[in-house]
Image (cartoon, rainbow, N blue to C red; front, side, top):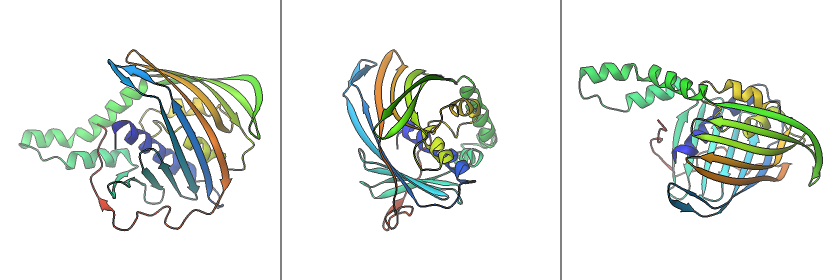
Length: 265
């Protein structure tokens, strides 16, 4: 799993777990989303345009995402406070705790110290890493502006929002059209829509600002500027409905081998 994907998945897991805490029992929600990213060039290397489709299954206390492009899935179990990352091509999976303190402790424990001095330093690593993450996220901010513009997209009445987000590596400006017409748990939908960095310490202020977007974003255009490159993308919701999830949707498939998670540190 790439560092970017790991961060996104971990953030999603933590905020979904919080949203499920007050979610009433209901049928599973099925959502399908398509994203198109234009071609761009970064650090002298050209990246081709790309289309990807993501499928979401949401249920009480659990969720799953399937990325049809790279044949991977992520399963979130709120009761176990775990996220499972599945690689279907390699028939393997890894697990990561939603508790950041526990994750840092496990990362430190996985490394063998060379001497007593390094062993002592590693004992302090979880606290150091957590404080460092707070410092990084402290430089992140977001501003949401409701424009008052409305229009119908598909069968959904939508409202337009401007979202400006500043990050350590750059900034993102987007136009988002959101609807409150969907018959879903909006607390959970908010969690899914704002999962990029939700598990990171210090993200709470950004999350609070993003709550100004009412409903679910069904169409969004974004331009992200980072390392001198501009990346333009479009994301649209293709389908949202109540469905019965296939058997085993929230389970690790039989025969899959457990491997260590790649820590994004």
